[in-house]
Length: 162
Length: 162
Image (tube, rainbow over all chains, first blue to last red; front, side, top):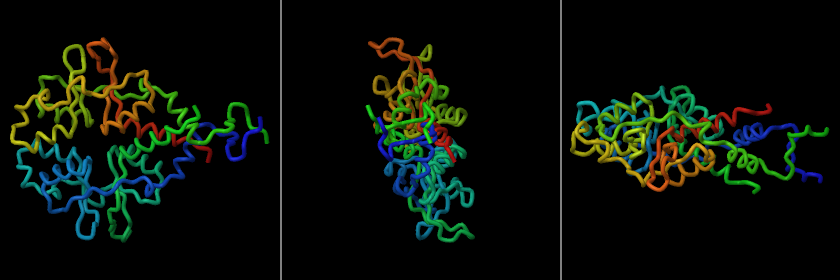
């Protein structure tokens, strides 16, 4: 039987097709809402915010949602086993600080974002809008995490012929 | 040009092909080594073990590596904002306990494992060998996490025709 037009992939293996598909999907269509905390908040506030927002990494922001740092559960556990009181340590003291933060824009592909997560061994990327590239002024507009990737894989994998 | 045999997928969409592919991949071929801690350890020990093993969830085991519970960074942060000393609280007090643990076997598919992560909103599954199904006696043989899924997606997506 002759295959239908548009359903026909000559000379390509399954994983080549998949690689192409992932490069057509963009971060802006899959990102989650941002989870943020102010620079002036304490480590205690950050832990509570993580429970409230049900997430594992927070973007630390200054005025107008401009990205200043990132704080992870790991950073917080490190403080927890130390000697300081959690409600006296500001997040700005333990966060990873700009410009040492790996970010992604909405226009980048899902493949590129997933690769950044793996290569940098991190759980989450702030999705940013570039306000000023020279001074690295980025506005936080979302987050792209290993949870996002897992949901995408399940969604893609749910479609089948059987 | 006539397509080569074996590279020809009539009547199937990209995501159908991908769904089939994910159902041919098994957890045993992708799982990471287990990260475990003894039931008798303290919350402080668990935090230190997470840093040493570089992971976010530990399987709590009794003798012979039998699964007893699971402890996450979230469980540990919950203790950290409480009033108790971390080195006096045993992990058995704060862990999720059998039989309330979602597990996966090596024979299950990567798709099935990823679906369990999403549906239960967890970061990690203990990969187990069933010793006695009736009494739910499971030996921990690995872990399957959102990191595993992200690595799989990047690996699959790296193959392309361009």
